[in-house]
Image (tube, rainbow, N blue to C red; front, side, top):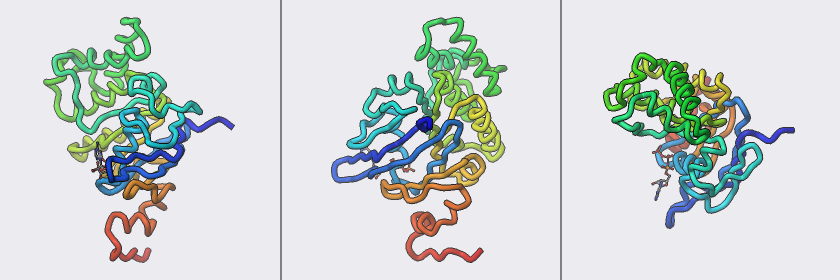
Length: 245
Ligand SMILES: Nc1ncnc2c1ncn2[C@@H]1O[C@H](COP(=O)(O)OP(=O)(O)OP(=O)(O)O)[C@@H](O)[C@H]1O
């Protein structure tokens, strides 16, 4: 049997006296969209940062298609095939949309023509072709968010880690972003997505993980997970009574 695309094996991270992530294990199969939920401070971003190489796990392994990438630098993890978006999109303001989309291409190639062709294709994919030559600082907040996604795609990842892609978006923008993430998967890129907006997670995810206080408390189909008593307790506290169906 093939190794899963991503296998996270018992990773932990401590900041001083605080155990931010404890013994976290899960798998993500090729082609999957996996949602990661959890209340504030649950350890989601820390887990992301360990997978993407921004933090070295204190313990555990992160296997990408069977290869341990834990502890590699972010640049090398990107080259291995894991891309990420950030909550705050920070494009190069003075560069055009296409130029921003070219930057990541140099992770894979030094062929400027090839990189430009890919950047132009991604601009079309994002629906930003009419703004291809617009400087990024002149984009709307939502277009900047799409550009952030495109910049991650320009590194040609096998797996994309996405952090709160609809934060600050209007309802119609959120619908557009959900459609865009589905099309990311159609490009052959698997997705791990942290998102607070439940509707987005429910619409997108094949499977949902829930973290609370650094640990995984649920892993299953979206509908099962959001009605699980452990998950409801983590979000609403001990006194929450699960409503009858
Ligand atoms: N660099 C750091 N130094 C010290 N403590 C940190 C650091 N990063 C995160 N923490 C702490 O680790 C815990 C987990 O934080 P993390 O940001 O991973 O949670 P989260 O689930 O992403 O939360 P949110 O939904 O609010 O973004 C929190 O208590 C946080 O204060």
